[in-house]
Amino acid sequence: MSSSSRWPAGPRRVLVVGIDGVRLDLLPELNTPHLDAVAAAGFLAPVEVDDATPTMSGPCWATIATGVTVAKHGVWGNHLGGNRLDVFPDFTTRLAAVHHRRTFAAGGWEPLFLARQGGPLFAAPGRLSYIAPLEDTPEDWEVCDERVTAEAVTVLAGDDDPQASFVYLGAVDETAHFLGCGAEYRRSIEAADARLGRLLAALRARPGYADEEWTVIVVTDHGHVDAGGHGGRSAQERTAWVAACGPGLVPGGAVLPVRHVDVAAQVFAALEIVPDPHWTLDGRPFTPAAELVPQA
Image: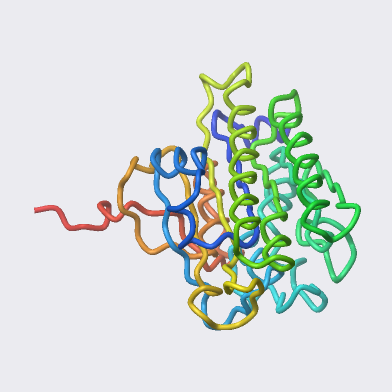
């Protein structure tokens, strides 16, 4: 039996856009129409980085991508060495290997995509696009994110037809590290939102879009202190967020508290895949709160 007949892809598709280091408390002040549209079509909810997880990109993205906590995936810092990602792989790798789904991952931060610094986190998606910044500066990361977005637009709108994709944008975080959370940081968030808009436009431009059912998830990994930087335990650093829309998510409806481990679980649910109990995922799909309210 062929893999396509054994695991039919169906109309469901998922796009996860990871924007590194975006503070939730600043979003209401900013011009982010595309993120606002995702939230209006579904929800935007705060995420608290759990007490066991360092407020660093490596651990947080590993939790987001694998659906398990640091105690299982073993990523404790921005060097991913000593991890257990072979046992607890990211969703693009698991879907490609187990369910023979076409998957795609793109971005410019080495340990997420390359065998460097203990990586990669995204080990074996069906298609991988790594585009490095020339230097670790805010300006070069903006160029990098532009190139990543252009590549992702080409793939999402093309014949590759990935059923699950992850696109990473890193300029916002880099800007905060260099310049703090001032005007340049805010402009970088708005630039990231414009790139999100281009990705969403690529979905709508697909020839089969009218017959497809897309789930879109936008997520950040951690916050920043005002001066820029993270890794501590302050509320600013520990507060992240998720926005999502798609089948089963009621526009403007309340959802149960959302955690980073729930992102991968929602990816599987959106593709109508029931996780194997042996995966021992720690997350659950985004559940509308109304579903758990006893009916009179």
